[in-house]
Image 1: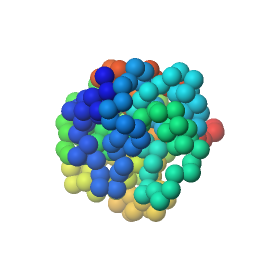
Image 2 (image 1 turned 90 degrees about the horizontal axis):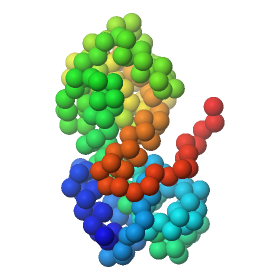
Image 3 (image 1 turned 30 degrees about the vertical axis):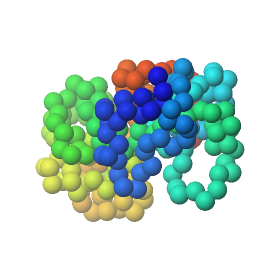
Length: 227
């Protein structure tokens, strides 16, 4: 298979046209017609992941977060130069993946009855399962409440959807990496919100891509924060 074949498979499952306008999902580095023998799946393309890819003779990295997240006038980053020099292609499936798969995968893990509402996954939940979610992840809580029946889920950094969650009648909102000023707005809204960080992204992205596309999951823990 070629790089373009993997791109097309990803596009069939998680259409790149669904990515946010500010996102850089898609083929970021590499020749679309290059032959691919070995694929590495990772949440992030860090220096350690690039070294792993080189050591394993990887031809294509499929990443959740794009390693290039701005318009570049020059390429000087060592990891990008390494990728180009070793002819390792990179495809990112970011907000297009989130929109199609992430919330549903999270709901399925906790056996929740759910439905898609554009970016939101709306699910019925009981207090026992909600408490389990809070315990399973290093959660930060805004406006905690004792009882919840309906939740809205948008994983990743998606605090801007809290008003959509309210519009859908959700009692609680689950997302990740909420910025301080967004947290203040959510606090004023009185919506119970649970910030579970980026941990769930790593759990679901690598698992789903390996199942649907194939490849080897990176052994590198790319989470940048220490406990």
